Image 1 (tube, rainbow, N blue to C red):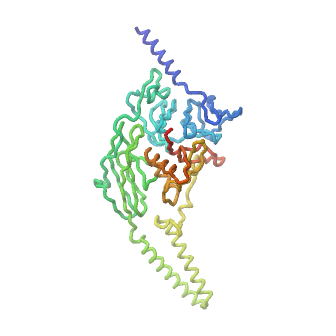
Image 2 (cartoon, rainbow, N blue to C red):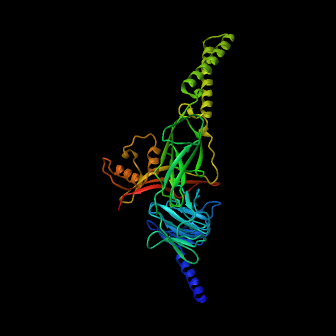
Length: 446
């Protein structure tokens, strides 16, 4: 009997090991193929082999699995982390996973229809958002603890998580969707009314949340697209500039399902000494004192039109410089014409990543180009006023934007809209192009 159990265990280990083997090759499209060779990724195209470059200090280690993103690029599970490659670049770049993402060395990855990337590592199992790479990990029903040996689509739907002894099925999106519960600001229950305060404002926000696996909370200011994590059930928010502000809060469950946002509205007033009338009056009084002093000095030196003109010009220049200094110190004056100095003091560090973000469309013929944002029919000053609602919107809202685009008068039809960041990474050798990142997308039903 014991011998049979041992034999069954060995067969299970061998079967799980075979199932966990990643594909050695994957089609990138347009005749390009990626192939794993130890710790290298090789691109085969038109009979030419190209070894993709690793960036300084960011080695991949042994390549374990490829997972293609139909909307652009290929995710690579490697010994030293999660990487991304794209046909437009010859580099392989490691992705910095953010808060909540599974930690450890990836052994398997699966991209689902919602563009969530499920990851099994030697230490954890979980999921990450492929636009911003925050995630969730921990205990999942029916999935034992680590270590894991692989991950793949289950033939009956969901995911198949592999261990050394067996495989286990997990089906995401079960149970009620997440929701944000009661909210309190500075210890007082929030009743839905607009909050008021005088700059500078700091606010403690506490919120309850419910969702499968225990919901976590994220928030943004003024409809920003980069959702930040709450610190537990409460969070302190600082640095709200004067004006009408919004704070959106969402709940996220273990599968990264997101609740509708709860919006707190805040009216942040200027202190009296920073209000426009005080600024105009103060600068006028300052200019009058300076001009009076300079006119007296000019008169003592003999007067004359040239000296008085220089006194007037010096007053204008000195007043302008003082206003520029105020613009650099206080947030209300950083727009034109008082641009301030703070916008010129940003620092860049090695391994920083950046690049322009644009909205692109894909035609039925497979061509991709920049979207004509006017086709949406929105009134906007910057492209972010179109991009951010798209990124923050649920699938139904994104499909609505696709319908708006295709409903424009010229009649042109596109099959997909994508928000893409064309990225570079700063290294000791300068900026190096890395794989573009698809931050959000919607596609017409096939």
